[in-house]
Image 1: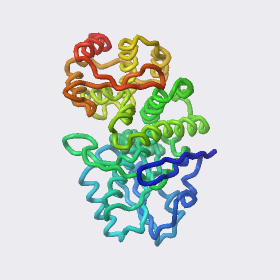
Image 2: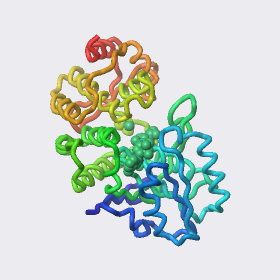
Image 3: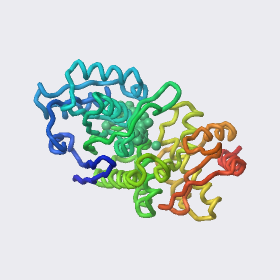
Image 4: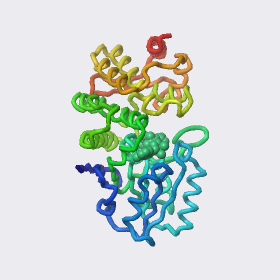
Length: 355
Ligand code: NAD
Ligand code: MG
């Protein structure tokens, strides 16, 4: 099975193709031919899939570079090393860079591609579920010691080649992390996509047809939002549904304690509760809660203080005039940005934490 969507950007368009085994036919999906190919991957992914890609090109045409697996590779040092290696290997503006891996590789390599010789073409080959989110939308970047993703740019790939077969080797925890963002796209899109996503049983091997459908639908939701508002002036903030508390939790617990998706999954639960109380609407809180619980997402919060979480939430990039803004739902498929009264939010959070 194979399917594709075309994404429009300010500077043109690119095609996202998802399918089973398509990593073995990379050339078919490239928009043009290139003088040389430079594949960058992380150690885990390289051990599994690098050779599949490399062998499709003549040996004098292809080079590769492998970074350590994990968030630490989104660093200025790793970026600099990548540039040095690319220069030594003679990469130029007629070369193509392929980012083979999850969001870490995609963000690092995309940023590298956006700045190397003022920008060279790059292709995203996502290998995680989370990367359905990170590989489209054009944001690329690395971390600074003072914060995540603080150094970056907007730089779309020339193609996204998403081989869902590679997702079979993902650890369950990474599947869960990525699916939280798929559900988020469901919440933003509407009842039917949302209901379809929460039918997924993540504890069993994923059915490739369903997975391909969910990933492409998620990509379409994200793409539609980004097409409306590439530079995040308003609508793009919707993609932060569940992230105000999610980010605060990640930061309070220490990055890496919970996966991003685990934190966002709880963040969405909280956002649903707050939405219900703010707009007096009925949302599928129970159905969603059941889904995260049966799929093994943490549903019991560690003993954290509402006050320290609120302080973290204030650091959210949506905060305006010191007031926390949350993405809430008036209905599934109807997100809004809401200025939050601090006392109300504090009480909601205390209640949620069982304080
Ligand atoms: P990741 O790239 O670190 O991958 C998670 C882990 O899975 C890694 O250890 C990796 O080696 C391993 N892995 C990857 N593919 C595998 C496979 N097929 N089989 C087995 N193991 C595999 O993390 P991620 O969750 O994909 O992405 C997280 C990053 O994405 C964060 O840095 C985040 O900031 C970024 N992100 C960016 C955007 C954006 O718009 N640019 C959006 C969301 C997230
Ligand atoms: Mg996210």
